[in-house]
Length: 264
Image 1 (cartoon, rainbow, N blue to C red):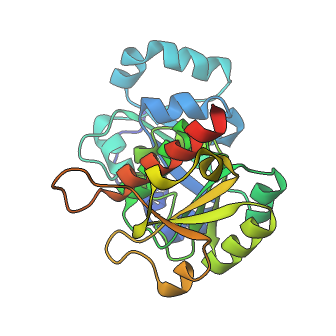
Image 2: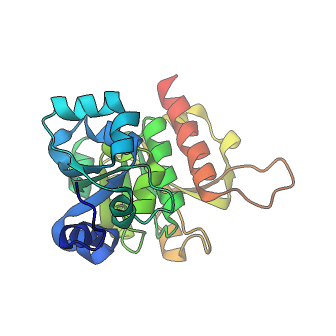
């Protein structure tokens, strides 16, 4: 059992909470039982696995799957587990995984029908929740623009609750390049923007067509150069007194509007 939080091994793994270490190694941290459950569907991505005695006992069925996948578990003390994460109350499990993003060209080659493009999204919780909503709505891919939050940030990873492993995503893509290539591939591009035409005003044919939804920065929205590139600005109507919707909530509504039209 690893018991010293200051051991070189522990410090080396803990560095993966920082973007520079993730970028240089091609690895990232995955915390908690739900993330591990999803990662076990792609076990070759798991490089190392750390767990406390309490976690082994609490998630016995999960660790039976770990054993079946022939993944070694490094037992650690509670203080060591806490040193490996950036959470206040860690759940007793930390895995080191290989990064799994794809390229924009890979996404286009798969002939997607529904794509989410995150343009300069900075909030980790929003970014992860949009990826989760894209997964739930059956979207084919998510694209993170350059200047967006790092998808391998532990807060983003946690907020995806395992959806990170379910659909392809690309990172560090230039917005103009993404829009141009997606249009060339036959997708219409909608910017989710409060000043646009409201979703209920769109026809089913409009929503059922292959679509990329672009979601802008939480604080300032879209740069005009991005709006100049899209086919249409589309708004989620507000029927109550709220001034606006949380970005991830609005993204969920937009993605599901397309998903309903494409699947019915």
